[in-house]
Length: 325
Image (cartoon, rainbow, N blue to C red):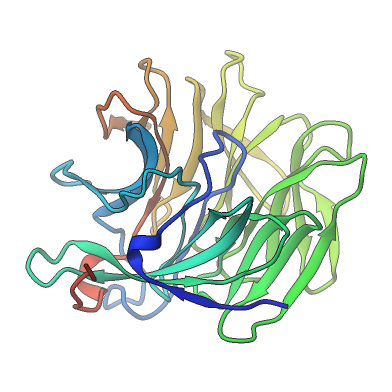
């Protein structure tokens, strides 16, 4: 049974960073809160995880100015943020005692600066079992995650249903589940075919199918806003270094777009850019790739470890509320 536990912002704790294993999730609404044409606009802000102050904390990056703001200061490690743009929420896992639980926070704009900030925290699970690597649909109604039982989904709202979709089987390893923005499918990495590849579970048919072959998927799975393309971290690059690949979820065809020790990518709302983390210049930093031109920009320069970047919704659509103290 799932329970909710309202917590003050000062009690923030988030699961430690898992490089290259967890999936990223950005659920984008396809109508409302976007442009006049109904197309969701790209955001000027990015949330990411960094170890620049020692412990892995949650940070905010403004793309135009490159200004970085620390969002959490708990001294505890953080793990892959998953953003629901329609519901304007952030879902994550956090260490609670000896185990890990799921949490959800809301985004709002600071009254003075209009910069995004976190305004509330809800604990979604309370039990002795670990829950981690969450992802969320565009409307915020469903959360997919890994647990000791396997890959599960959790309904949003009080008393939301919890369902085990892909049970753990002893000889197989299933990880990095990411629910599609429309909530119909869950992509995940599995070695049940003998090597780690991308698989998709269809919630309608309740069947899982292998999508890729020979791509050596390492994690870093994320959906595009229209649920028609995925991005993954791959080890099957010509250079032999980890890279980013785009994958068609129907045909399984893929295209490698980077291969310079890159990982954990996520799409922009319009699908024409991807954020990712890379050690190509030594330290793990954040980069932005424009897919049409192949131009890559370095976004951060820090002595700490920067990872797991995801776009936020456009700032004008965020409600105006002051962050709690």
